[in-house]
Length: 272
Ligand SMILES: O=C(O)CCC(=O)C(=O)O
Ligand SMILES: [Fe+2]
Image (tube, rainbow, N blue to C red; front, side, top):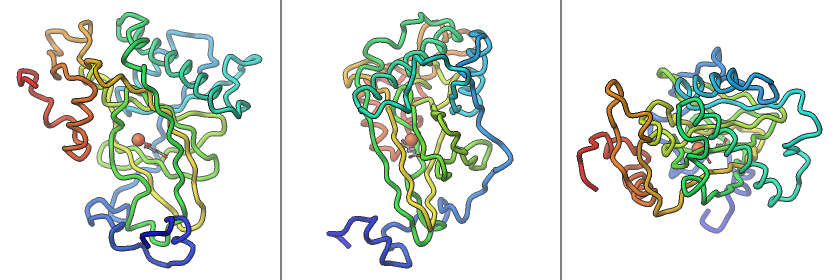
């Protein structure tokens, strides 16, 4: 199948090629789903700033994820869905992401502009296409991972569930909500908040009938930017967990540890 697109191949075959079959222990067919729990939905159109901040922090601590909706938006700061031009779209997403990071900063006692420079200076937009898959139980659309970003904002196709978040030993499917964005904390935010906010493991499952599209906006630091726990979050009860490393080094660790950033980092006394 080397010269074919996966999407073409999928229409012609009734099984997945062996190279796509995941080891038994991480196959969707063998994992526990939790369909009773939902990740929190936060209405940014609400008036009570302190309440929005509380909800963001609590979602980021417990799930590493939330969905963001805008009810009662008046003629729109953020007419995201109407913007067809990618440039405009990413500008708006950047605004939304910086707003969320400002609210997080406020909630954690950081300078409101903490994230405005190098920590978010290199955003990347990725469009994902997941074709239907003949054997969804054996493979994954996106393998289990944490995002190596500061913050990720994802627009999901409305009519189909693919993204799942790991919490308490089970996978919670993220139900798409029209007009909502899925927001998740990247590993850089976990480091900066000294582990208070979590970059949750997530994965994408496939299905045998419908293809799925998503657009991910990753707010990434510059390569040279030093990522380290912010001073205000280091306390006697929460001593420094991560040593300072550049984003480039962190990404290198990530690639070489197959998505496990933490192993190398937990000992802050180790030098790089
Ligand atoms: O497409 C999705 O639903 C999620 C993709 C994802 O997790 C990623 O690009 O990091
Ligand atoms: Fe991801």
